[in-house]
Image (tube, rainbow, N blue to C red; front, side, top):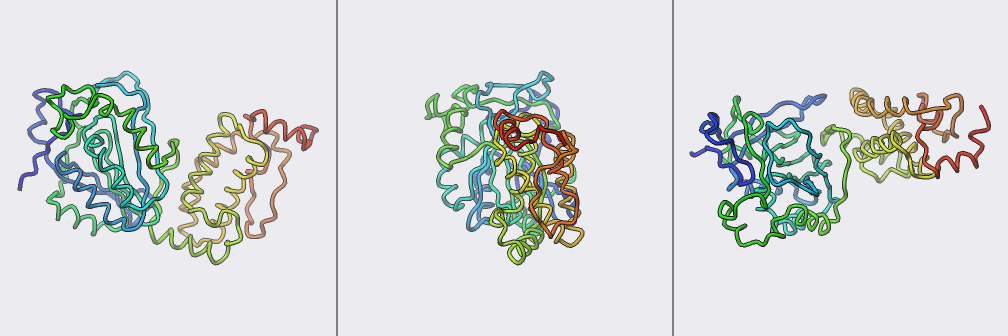
Length: 362
């Protein structure tokens, strides 16, 4: 069995690098923080096999999933991994949940470009199934799962061995190159026939985002809820909270929405008072679920939102006053998010607060 690693065209080790000869395909795994039975797998797979690995993994997501795309809208053509100068952060886009087969059919014409471009990352996930695949711009594969035996079997079937000394591109000096930055003779055969515009990631990635109706997401919370934990939360909501206006929203999305709302408030909240209250209602729903959950899952949710909670508390002013708190007999804790209002108010929010007499004193 040959396990030597064949680099994608857009990721090349520095010339004559001493580690280059020892790089091999393989994987390792580790438990995720705060998860006793969820794992992160890290794998290195040769470029010619990446497309097949991706398609095979997608079969675990039998019904629907969402596509992940990471790229630089105005990307450079080359950079060295050891460079110290600052560089722009990539934009990250998610598609809505779609039939997995539809996603595969849509991205099939682009898959080779996604694999070989040194400035592009892509993935496929279904949070409800506790499964995610992501191929970074370093062309390192990350798998997240709460069924590590199934994924071990999947990797072994594909002749990707376990290595406790796995060498990754981040361990050695290497170059990132876009497809536009590569001499045409160095492109894979299927890409040599494409025109310049078709090789431009800022263009073909825009095409993918339009085809899959993708939306940009901000860097926010990082957490993993297992299928069992998600089922426990979903059962609780369906039995006790079905009348809540956010009952149909996936709970993991509510956690991300709260984080996004806090981030928006940290800068300038541009919405009106109704929109501001909607953000607070998201936190109400989270508080209610925490109150009704058994430990240790309730504590896990508290830990997930502890950072955005702390940021929001710090951003509140006029704490001697409070907005009207919805009557919620299921929550016994202090709803601090109604105590005061955020410091950085946009014109619409400030206008509505004035109309509601907020600035007339305690």
